[in-house]
Image 1 (spheres, rainbow, N blue to C red):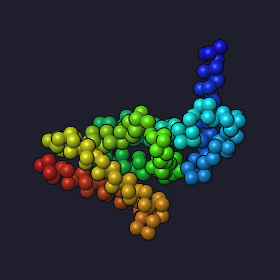
Image 2: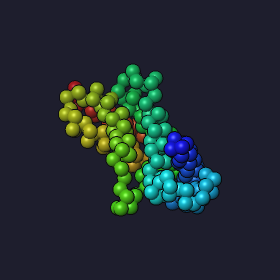
Image 3: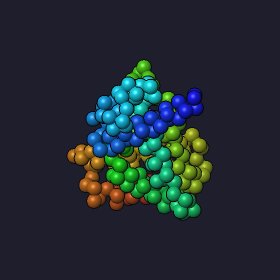
Image 4: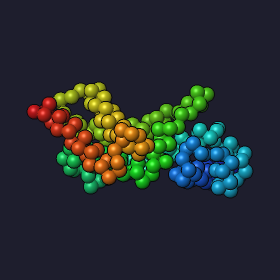
Amino acid sequence: MAGRREEKREDLKARLIEAARERIAKDGLANLRARDITQDAGCALGGLYTVFSDLAELVIHVNSATLKALEARLTLPEAKDRPPTDRLRNLAQGYLSFAVEHRNLWKALFEHFPPESSPTPQWHLNEHLFLMDVIAEPLAELQSDMPPEDRAIRARTLFGAVHGVVSISLEGRFVGLPLERLAREVDELVQTIAAGAERRRG
């Protein structure tokens, strides 16, 4: 009996996550409502709170799925053996294309701030680390003598540079770039940073 009950709970959990994911993808995180989610999932409003402590926890699970999809986009096997500069360029272009194709889900990764009473769990914080790891790997080839701590900082800096220009451009800020130029400029940015790393290595 307990096994059947747990199976039903996991099924409800999956339906709620998918319903929330579809709502965020369509309408954005700011418009997410518990009543809409449970209606889409085919359960009572109280059903959400038998699986998740609150709406913030549900969003964390949606963001977790988004991070897994982003990781799959950025860790393509065919790019593994390419030169480090090319791998960094591929990472930046993959990040940009994912942000463009899944704009609201991508934005939710950075717009979601759980309440102080329910902080982001460590397992979810750890899921974000792959972004730094996939950048640090080719950086290690470009600057093999750089201490790991400095390389981690450089990976965060490179991510921040790419994310920043992508974010302000997709938000339509006045300093942002038009979409037709964004891919080229992101590529140029990464090449410039990689070239600087190679010069320092030489």
